Length: 310
Image (cartoon, rainbow, N blue to C red; front, side, top):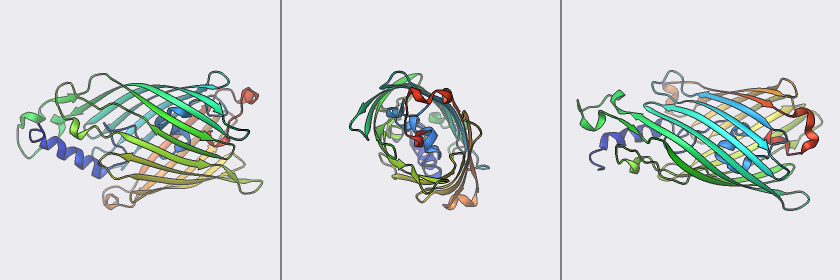
């Protein structure tokens, strides 16, 4: 079947070359604002926030490039009881002819390790649908019979797991967001779309003085048969109200982070990214917007979590 689907394989290789950070039909999409999208990659983040909150994230990468990635995601993170967290998320991701929709529910248990450290163990259940519009592609072989239909996974179910160890100022995470292979109901092309991912990250929140603090984050994504992706960022926060920072993805792009805590419930953030690879000849900008609403900001005594998750 590999020879029969050589055009499909070529397309996937092109997609990964253009934007390895999106990896549609491979893993959950990658946002630059890891502070707000951590639940997408690690179910152990459920319930780790200091307040219950819901977030909306939207990104548009490589503006002006035909078939460039567009993603929108909604995330809810809640503490059910003293040691149990609930997370819900859903996203739609479009990359060229590939459209992915996925919804997940996460449960996490938070265990006290010592007077300073806690550990969270999370499990995920998800349902997704992936469609690849092959007829929309232009091929060198006219009327190629293998490119005349839309590939569809139907509704498929998956699971994932994650670990999180955190204190007041530091955190470490490790996860596998998806465990199952992607399969299409009308074609056997799993050789090109299976790529399971592992995610690990470390970050913290440190006071520089009475007015400024810094939140550094480093994240590594490993996907089989693809280059390892490394993201680092540093966000400086002024009076916990104004965020200014930089992010960098190894060999791919650099970006500027801006955010404002409008009040004790509403936060709005923006990220501008500039490609440093050869893609900057085609497009010079990617944009990401995040809006977060805290649901119980006036009852912080309910529980206290580290500020860097909020």
